[in-house]
Length: 575
Image 1 (cartoon, rainbow, N blue to C red):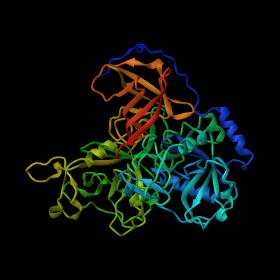
Image 2 (image 1 turned 90 degrees about the vertical axis):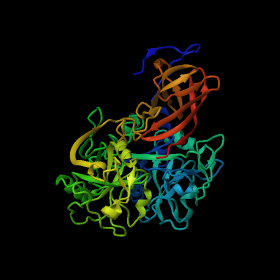
Image 3 (image 1 turned 90 degrees about the horizontal axis):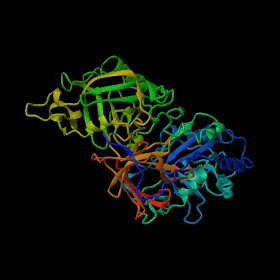
Image 4 (image 1 turned 60 degrees about the vertical axis):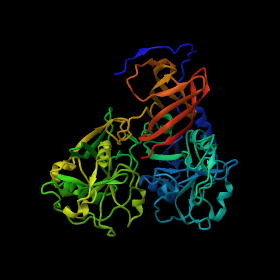
């Protein structure tokens, strides 16, 4: 337990930091008036992309470009844009930011970059001009306007030449709030590097001093649909009620843990998110729970529930574990060891959601698309490559709590028992390796699988049971989207304090110490940040941001009088 006493830093001028609304009304009004003169009446669907710099929010123009808007929404609902990143047009005066083609699987180097799984191309709907602040679809073939799939761009200037080039680029949305000035413009001003893939010649990175191929890029972590109209959005400071991953925004695909009514029936009981009819898996290593996606994979969910409610998953084993890939279960009993469970007829493949970390998908026979029966697996990392195999593996659920248990299972030693139990047991995780032979007590036992209502703490974010949303990894600080702040222990000289760092109202990279809340701490061996007032630096060993862990996070002091620092670099933790 940390001993806390209120204290003032020695020999330091304290000034209380004032807090402002995330989206100033005046700036938003000026921005919207400028667009109203050029664009048709607004639609009501508001989509926000959660990026490294902050949320980029846009209003879909469903009346002017209905097919293109729905196409974009479908990619978003499938989770296709998660872990994708932005690149820019040219080094001087960038005209646009572009995204939606590649995702970063987090394994390092160009081999980690995979193209997004593409739906069939759609027809061109060019009617609205490509003015600053609009969002347009990008054809895969520049000479064919009817080749649009997943790519899109944000116009940073008036790009009216796009209105006529090869049939015109279809504008399907426009940015709202301060998304343009606070995020897109700032992102385009960062140094850019070249990656060895087509189209990635100008990729902005967060590394001002020495930008390199491995410098952190501007990632789209997630996306959500704001539950309300434009006035609600502006009055709620940019939809901050949806900015925590959609826990009450409610209309995204369910790739955020099933928070809409069709994907697990989640509601907000006040002290956490309630997932109705979730499924929990009780093992001898610990318990994890998942939210189901009946609207995305109805036949697969019903098939899975048939096994659950008939107790056929009880007293089975996790029979496969591949680190940095998957753990797999649902096929074999503990007693007798290795016997197959009773199986129902195969279920038709229903691929729609990407195989990202913590999602749960059905296993199949190699090369046979419609061959899933009882076996399922949990993705340990972003396995987007599975979206391209034989029509894609059907994701039907996502782990909402206990992902740290899944990780613990994946870290167990493994044994090859193919000679004794069959080909399915080449990567069998074991909890105990003794000399009395292999029996059920040595394995990962699934005691029971059952349907229940689960309340998940809002700060857990469905990725771990330790409460900081980072799959069991203890971090120095956790960024809280609603308060736009993070709290951490920090050494200033030889003294240890608790600091609350609050985000600046108009600069998502800048944070100031809330000097009214500084307390002294006793060092109990926790990981701590370091603030060097002479050098003007703040170094935080690790920060969790919506379940993503960033290491060696460095800030440079910009205003000494208010202890204000600006982000200058970090490294992305390997997932």
